[in-house]
Length: 146
Image (cartoon, rainbow, N blue to C red; front, side, top):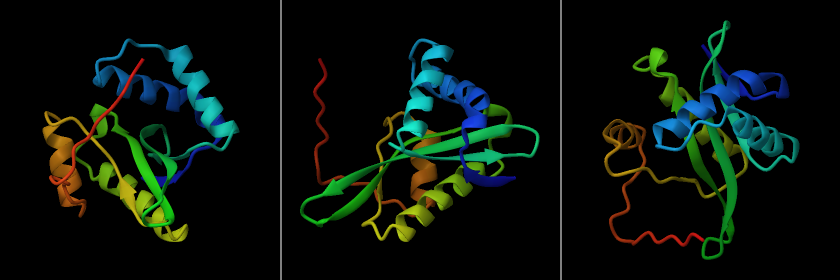
């Protein structure tokens, strides 16, 4: 299993993984939309995507977006998406993908990684604590949607 940067040639397999990820978060399946969305992110260089490649197929991915912290006066990376196909879970792939994300943070001299996940995502919450993320209990998270 290797973790590597995504290539446009991966878009078919990656789109399926991304669609499965969205369905996990209770969104409607939209394989064509997933393909368009990911192709734009890759072509416009708007995110960094790493894939877990078994040699036969892609079995997981992590997608990160650059953001900036004014108080730190530095870049942060938003670990926005992390997903491993259910047939490949329990093999340490998520940890490898997170490790690659940490490498990116170090290489770009950023202040680190931030993420959010649902409170009821028990596996994800355990994973992040096991990979040295700290749970921020001091701040409120707000969102606005139209």
